[in-house]
Amino acid sequence: MDIPHLVEWTIESIVIVVGLIAGFAYLTLFERKILARIQVRIGPNRAGPWGLLQPVADGIKLIFKEELIPNRADKLLFVLAPVITVVPALIVLAVVPLGPDMMIFGHNVTLGIAGDVNVGVLYIMAVSSIAVYGIAIAGWSSSNKYALMGGLRATAQMISYELALGLAFVGPILLANSMNLMDIVNAQRGLLGWYIWLQPLGFIIFLLAGIAEVNRDPFDMPEAEQELTAGYHAEYSGMKFALMFMAEYDKMIAVSMIAATLFLGGFWGPFVEQIPLLGPVYLLIKTIFLLFVMIWMRATLVRFRYDRLMAFGWKVLLPLALVNVVVTAVIVLVGG
Amino acid sequence: MTIAQIIFIAISAITVIASILVVASRNLVHAALWLVLSLAGVAVLFVLLQASFLAVVQVVIYIGAIAILIIFAVMLTRRVMRETKPQVNRYWWIGALAALLLFVTLVVILNQVPSAASSVSELPLPEEDLLSMLGTALVDVDGFVLPFEVASVLLLAALIGSLVIARPIKLDAEEGDEA
Image 1 (cartoon, each protein chain N blue to C red):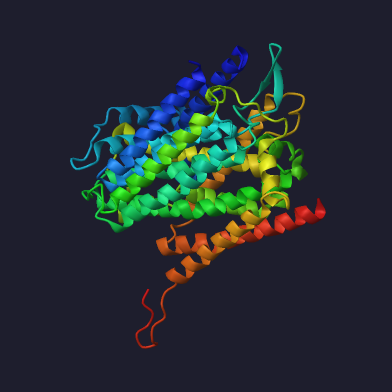
Image 2 (image 1 turned 180 degrees about the horizontal axis):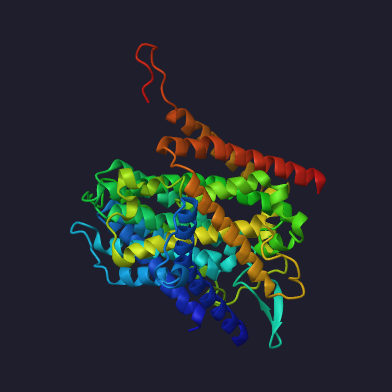
């Protein structure tokens, strides 16, 4: 653990966390703009050119809002819940490689904090399983039956879809013969090497389960506005609400970036070998495309009914994911 | 004291205190959350022992699956906000006896370990990848394939059993099926 490495990791951590916070702010604007275009509206266009200052205005507004804590809430857990929700969303990307190795000032720098760790995929699973706690605690500590229902639904939904999500990870692991995300990315050089061609079913399962995991439309049961008055964060206001919101959007970014890494070749693209700095750019483009798909789905599809949502997860997605794992394993064993 | 020792003492203290609070807390949800903290402490201890795989598995299985199911069940079945329970039931002395026995055994065994081996230091790691060693040992015929398969069969039996219990009971045709 020498000094240059510590400096490198510190800078990369700061870049990722600040990038996720800025990404959250501008993802809200991106989403509102696209939703508006799909619904033949204009969207935010008053604050700054093309509405670019809208997230800043929203942020300032939320800072000055009153922070309410319900009288009968469990105060400590109520305050802690947004923190527990947002931290996993910020740290999950630590194992995603952002680019190939490169030389800066004579040091061999790896883009991405810990892309080369040998339990990378399991780390993602572990962190995403912690994310459930923030939501469950938020729903429970609010002392509000709507919040509690929302929290319960979110917990049940995330536990159920985590199984399919975990099984969707297995395809790329088997193909690359490694749980190291750097190895998985390096195995997908060239457009035809992308695992989406070998694992089309796995990719679709991953995307659907990922959307359910971050509670987005059409799986946004936990915060169904019409029946649950926004669900587990009903009692939250001001910056605590903003943290809940930020966790949701940062998880969207994380799911998209992980999907791009596992199935769309990660940071590989034309000329990355000559110019390593193009790597993060390609990863960002792929991530933004997947984010667009998620927003597009929100604009197009209606919400599932709750029992159908659970039935879909357990009776359709999970068996399909199992079949996908078995078929992939047999093909890898016979072919490789 | 090295940095590793300071971290070890701090994490152990957190784990022990959280474990005590699990049984001392009157609120069921609080007790479950203290359990999560003590499990997380054990995961950090695994990291200190350079067993990253075990640490991650500890988080995925114990924190991500078992503890959240406990909290879920408590939230689902109890009047959740204001319910408090007494900390002891009438079998408390059996538990205390078992804990005492375990403690005495551990103290006796640890006393036989030479003091050089019990100080915290960098572990000498073999050259091979520990994770793949673990993986091959589980499916190797000379390794642990038999216990591994027995555990799989046991889990499968539990899975089928839970399905049988949870299946809606079909009553007579007139009464329809009550879940």
